Amino acid sequence: MSADGLGYSDAKRAAQAAAVQALSDGLGPAAAARATITATDAFFAQVVDALDLKPQVDGLACAAGCAWCCHQIVGITGAEAALLAQAIAALPPERRTILATRTRDAMTRGRGLDQRDWWAARIRCPVLEDNGLCGLHADRPLACRAFNSADADACKRSLLGEAVRTPVLGAQHGIWAHAQAGLAEADGTMAPMALAEVLERILAKA
Ligand code: SF4
Image (cartoon, rainbow, N blue to C red; front, side, top):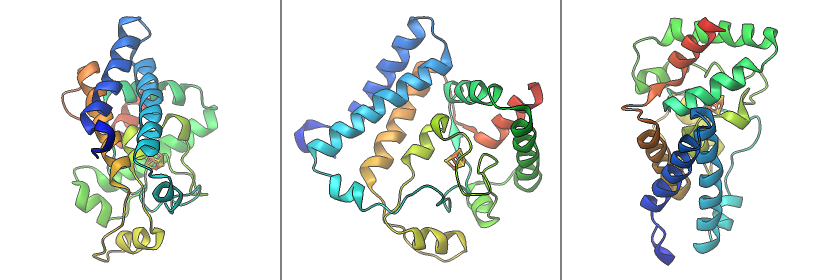
């Protein structure tokens, strides 16, 4: 990513500045995560325009209900955890109960596994609904916003164990990964936390 002088470091700077502003305004970590998401959406749109990436974006296979990629360990920052905690607190009690059950099931199978083994075991994200939709889509982690693929069948084959390379839009991956790094620096997250483990902690208090 280099045309027009746009680089991943700019994505990180924009995300970090948005988060720092929210935190210094006293809005709290959930608002910092939300500000990062808003800033990064805007940055990505700017890059798509500047680098004429619309054909590639339009060619992505990702669509509502496609969830092959939602079977991995998702790393999140403290601010993203706060945003998820807020979203979970707003869920009806019966949905919180379902999420708690799914989280328990995922952690029973996945505790201690690394990314490769979690993927090989095909453990669903606890947030993933039976219809293939993300149950917390508006508040989903930054890493989930990075996921993309131009070939859903390749994603499926990969999850089923085939050694296949999935074609992705690298700029989307890179921008959201760097945005998360900017948010982590703003909120002091030393290392990403695993989403399912964070859900366990959130739901234990709910
Ligand atoms: S949080 Fe949502 S988008 Fe992210 S892995 Fe889970 S179900 Fe998929």
